[in-house]
Image (cartoon, rainbow, N blue to C red; front, side):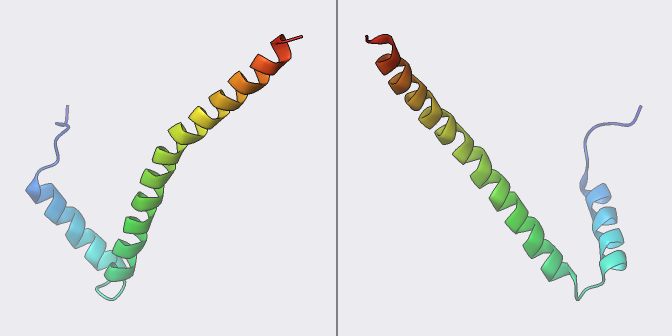
Length: 69
């Protein structure tokens, strides 16, 4: 079985392969797009709990008015 840890030699090999595939002129654009994707993912994960709390508040508010008759 292959180990689950990625060491420095493996990372260097991957970077070399990426450099060969995309070329040095495309690497800054690639890094920028990856960084933007990670930022959007983090923002989305942080907004999700806020939206859930807002929905819970709406449900509590509407269920509280429906039960009062």
